[in-house]
Image (cartoon, rainbow, N blue to C red; front, top):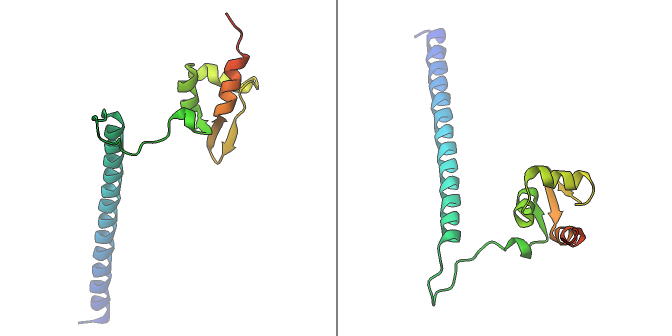
Length: 121
């Protein structure tokens, strides 16, 4: 067997191993994503299930009112307004926003102050 032939076999072997490793990495990535999706589904089911009398409820996420800061989507839900309206309030300076990385946060106390500043009917 010549050196060229020998190195050709090694090269082919290494290439096959690299392809297999890549396919395994993709499979593990898909599995991790599926596990994460299932975890979120289970948590959502747990939050939506009524608690039976005499049983303690599962540990829940804090209610929006119990948080110090909420994301814009949560603020919209609390305030009962749409996307356009909340951004109009933010841009007008009536609703302060804090930035943490890419996340926009609104203080719950600022939401309460915004409600207090609304005119009475």
